[in-house]
Length: 274
Image (cartoon, rainbow, N blue to C red; front, side):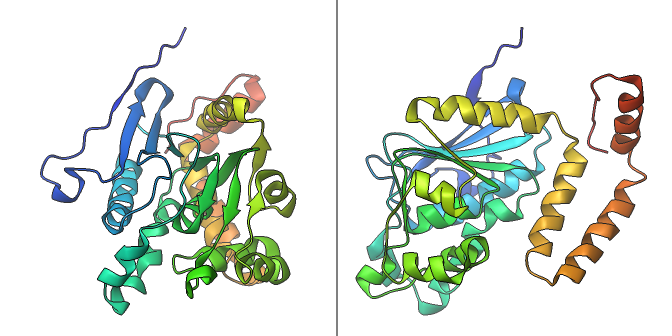
C-alpha cells in the first residue's frame, strides 16, 4: 500500500522572493509526485500584486523539481478567488500593469501538467490563472466571470484572449462585455472547463486525474504540452509541422522504446522521462 505524507514545500533559503509567501502556501506529496499551490486568504482569496510575482517564481521552481510530476492549483474555503486587489492596480505604473499577463501565464509555461481545482467564485485574475492551467476540474458551485467592465476596465492578464481561443468570439463577447457570470455546468457545456462534478466529488476527481497523468511518460507529456500550446497560435499547417518535428525527436527516446516493449510484452510501462 502506498502511504502519502503531505508536507510544506521547502524553497531555496536564498530566494528572497519566496521567503514569505503572500496569501498562499505550497505543499508536496512525494509519494504521489504531486505539488499543491493552495490559496489561503479567505473568504475570497484575493490575489495581491506580490502574489502574482511569487506565482511565477513558484511554478518555475516546481517545474525544475524531479520529485514533482503534477501540480494542482486550489484554494481553501468555498471560493477559488474573487479576483485581484483592486487598489493594487493604482499603485503600479502603466508599464507594470501592461505586463501582468506574463506572471499569470506561469502555469502555461510550466512543462508539467497543471490542474486547477475550482469551487465557488472564480473571477478576474483567479479565472485568468485557471485558464492558463492545462485542466480545470470544477464543482457545481463554481461561477466564472471577468467582471472588469464593472470598474471601467478590461481583463489584463490573458483572460479574454484565452477565452477567445477556447469558446469563440460570440460567447467571449457575451461573457466579457457584459461581465457575465457563468456557472460550472454551463462552463463545461461551453468547453472552457474540463469537467464539472458534484462538490463532494471534487477532491477525489482531481486526485484520480493526478494518478492518471502520472502513468504517462513525463517526456511525452512535456512534449505534447509544448506542441499544443505552440500549435494553438499558428495555422493548421504550422501546427502539423510543430507536431511532426516533436514526433521525430521522441522517436529516439528511451520512454518510447519502453512503451513499445511494454505493449508487445503486455505489461505496464515503466517510464523514466528520457
